[in-house]
Image (cartoon, rainbow, N blue to C red; front, side, top):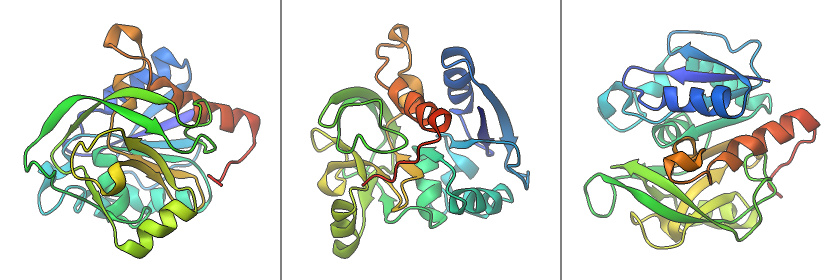
Length: 228
């Protein structure tokens, strides 16, 4: 399996994602520049955290206009897996591939710590190696991770089982403590915590490895899960 690791000006977690795929999962990955226009030959797309374009205007607002995003949208619409982490989550909402928006943290400052998450849906392409209701420890590092959407969208997220992860406590003001959501089709996941920074015990936790193992399990089995 071959993973595309996107790189925008200001990305700072691309190497971590590459390490998680190549050195830990022993799969193939390649860096793909924001100037590229094709994702041909890739089985999954990973959008890293960082500060694309310096987080000017809004986090992810400029990155959504990068040439590669046209290919990302087409890739997602074709039903292929797309994972956006932290700034990647922000980019996915700005691009309209996920509903809602990421607002400034309730504390109005940057938060960098390890938090506890609960797996809300273990029947997705990104969570099938976890048990529903399991708690995992992952690091966060964001200033705009406060998830918000209108009441109708929130009701749909619950009804369609699109909430993949929640914080076990109120970390940043997110509605219903949402930490990660999928699109309705189940092939796009955005999450604020960093699973790629928790793939080895040496890093303090290997709880994030399940996200990448889940993608690989789905791709290799050919079985598509839709989060239902």
